[in-house]
Image (tube, rainbow, N blue to C red; front, side, top):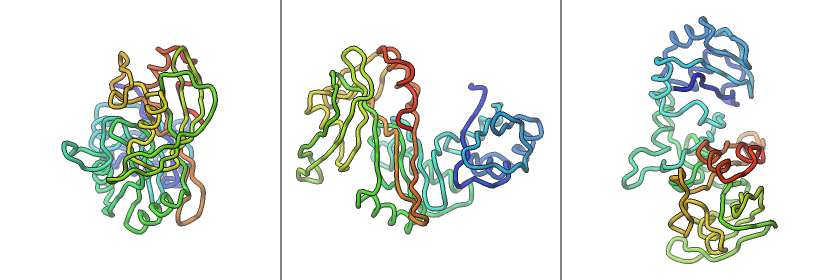
Length: 298
């Protein structure tokens, strides 16, 4: 068990008392437990012990020293605190792990939307949630979710109008030194449609290149298909010719940055999703410098 649970205060929690911010992030935890944790100096704000009524601000770092009871509350809350990358009254950005479907599908009763809905119900919030874009089951990273029909509709129109940017990291077999574009026809809803992906190399080691990719159109398996067709299959993507690697049990594809416009305010929101530990570990095994195995483009 890790010794600490850490996360940053986001827009939804800003300017609240610490105990209220904790209750929003870990809704299964009784307020009596949260107050006790603060009293026993097990909760810190920016590395300093904090009282339950201390006001917290956007980007403050919250740290809680773990205990068995606290970890039980984390499990019962359905989302881990660090998975909530952003939240306001209209939307959330959730860090989806690889292996979890975004929505209900055959054989995937446990899915991201179910977890988000259960999390919000613990808070007493019962509005409908909907994904504004999707990631494959094997892909990790940032997923934008609308809270309520009106917000989901506004955010969906924004995505359709190309007013959001989604950047991915992929590790491919191949030596790629220059940026470029991938354009092709890919299968989509019974026909073949144009697909465009922009890419640029971030780093290389041996016969492998770390690419950052901008998904301009949103076709199913677009990045995976186009990279394979270009002769650069993604590591772990056996469906499209990618090789398996020791310790890698997924596709090396991660949505690491999402930029969108908040509907009510028009404010541009930029969210980073850190590269998961298993992908960081593989990069170090392949010989990439440590500086490239953490957050990119943040």
